[in-house]
Image (tube, rainbow, N blue to C red):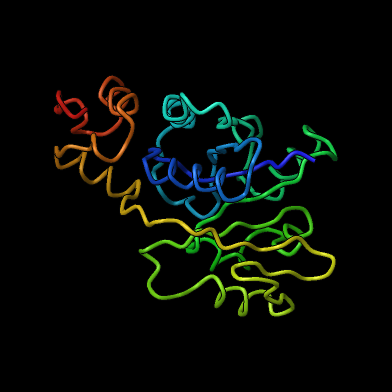
Length: 222
């Protein structure tokens, strides 16, 4: 079985925290491949202005250069309608076949709202969940969310929960990276430097395509 990581998000824009999560997933889970999957039309952000999908895909491809196990998938841009995780997962299964063992990487803040996702209980029949703690989510722990949302799950070992007939839930341990896409967008709009938060190639892309108002004004950010 190949161990396949699936890391979805808006990635608007991708930053060093996303890459750190990817590296932690490779290291702790022994993944063969980790797919970064930008959402085309995230249903939980339908009222927000989001950078066009093609730009977010291009920035991701620049960001993952140099790590052959990182792959950017445009799977959610190839279909119409909201980007539901269950649909993406089923497409990956069709594409990769039964020999793939899936690990879906998700932040603690998103995992805390998992019961609002389409067919969320079916998701855990199809993929393991790997939950990252985020410093912005207060004192809530992965264990607390598991107890609240999945009461049938029992802790099998430290940071691992299981339930008969379903995939496991893992807590991904890593040093917090104090950066977010909204922080980067805010810095750009204020004309502040961002070169310490995102890969140099992504800085150059933002400047070249003028995706945010102040991006073109910062000539020496990298």
